[in-house]
Figure 1 (cartoon, rainbow, N blue to C red):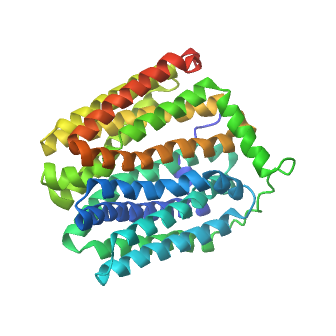
Figure 2: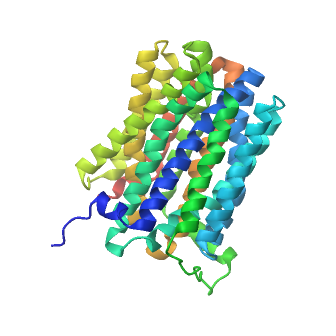
Figure 3: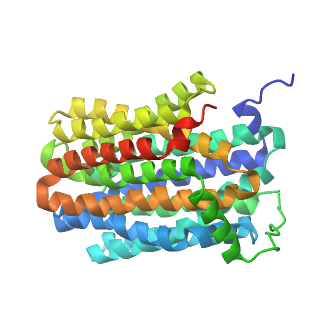
Amino acid sequence: MAPPVTPWQVLKQRDFGLFWASLLFSAVGSQISTVAIAWQVYEITNSPFQLGLAGLFRALPIMLLSIPGGVLADRMDRRLLLIVTQSLAALLALALALLSYFGTVQVWHIYLVTFLSGAVGIFDSPARTALIPTLVKPEQLATAYALNITWRQIATLSGPFIGGVIIASVGLSASYFIDALSFSSVIICLALMRARPEPPSGEKKESPLQSVRGGFEFIRDNSAILGLMGMDTCVQFFGAYRSMMPVFARDILAVGPTGLGALLGVPAFGALAGSAIVMAMGNPKRKGDLIIAVTLIYTAGLVCFALSRSLALSLVIVFLLGLVDAIGETLRDTMIQLITPDPMRGRVKSFDQVFMSAGTYLGHAQIGTAASLLGVTGALVMGGCLGSVGVLLVAKFARGLREIDS
C-alpha cells in the first residue's frame, strides 16, 4: 500500500505551493474588503434594506454568468484567464480605495464595484479550481483540493478580525488599498509559474448550449441532487444572517467594528472544527439523514442568535453555526460528487454554484427587506423558522436523498 500523501508533500511542489500561498494572501485581502463594504454601506445609509442590497448586486452576476464562466474556463488558457481576472479585481478595489480616501464615495459606487467584482469572480473561480490538477501529481490531487478548502477557511477566520482592527485604527480606505495589493500576489505567482499548461480543448461534439441543457436535465431528473441544492438554497435565502452583522455589532450588541470582525470571523473556527469532525467520521452512512439533521440544527441556531443580547453568547452561537454548516456542506458536496458521473461534474458544479451563491446573496436582499419591516431580530427569527420548513419539505419529498446509504 502506498504511503498517504501529506499536505507538506503537496505544498513542496513549487508551482502549487506558490499558488496556494498567493491565494491565501489574496483571500485575506478580500475578506478585509468584505467587512469594510458592509460597515461602510451601513454607515452611509443607516438602512438594513440598503445593506442587504449589496448582496443583491453580488448575486446578479452569479445568476447571469456562472454557467458561461464554467464553459469559458474549459475552453481557454486558465492561467491567462486568471491573470486577467485578478488584474481587473485589483483595479476595482483600488477604485473603491481612492473614492473612500478622498471622501467622495457614495453607496451606488459600492453597489457598482460589488456587481463588477462579482462578475469578475464568476470567471475567476472555475479557472482557479481547474488549474490545480496541472500543478500537482495525480496521486496528490485529493490533498491539493483539501488544501484548497483550507486556505479559504484560514482567510475567513483571519480576514474579518484583521478587517475590524484596520477599520477601527486606520480607516476604510486602507482596507481597500490592502485588498488591491493582495491581488498582486496571485498575478506575480502566475507570472513566475514554471508550468505552462496547454489551453483545454473543451468538448467539441456539442455546442455550449447543448452542454448546459444536458447538465440541467441531469439535475432535474435526480431527486437527491435537486433536493440537496434546493435545501441549501432555501436555508441560505431565508437565513442570510451574516449580511446583518453590522446591525448586530453596532446597534444591538454595541461592540463596534472590532466586534464585527469577531462575529464574522468566529464561524470559521467552527468551520475548522466541523471539517475535523467529518474527517474523523471517515465515510459515514446515511449521509442524507445527517445533512437534514445538521441543517435543522443550523436553522434553530439562527433563531438563538437573533434573540441573543450578549456578545459572549452570540460568539458561541456563531461558532456552532460555522461548525454545523461545515459538516453539512462537506457531506453535501461529497454526496453530489458520488452521485454525479465524471463527464457531468463540471456542469453540475456550475449549477450548484448558481443555487448556493445566488441563494445566499439574494437572501441578503430578502433579509434586509424583512428587517426594514419587522426589525433585524424579527427578520432572522422568521428566516430560521422558514428555513426549517424548507428542510422538512425536502426531507419529505426528495426521497432519493434519504434512500442513499453510502
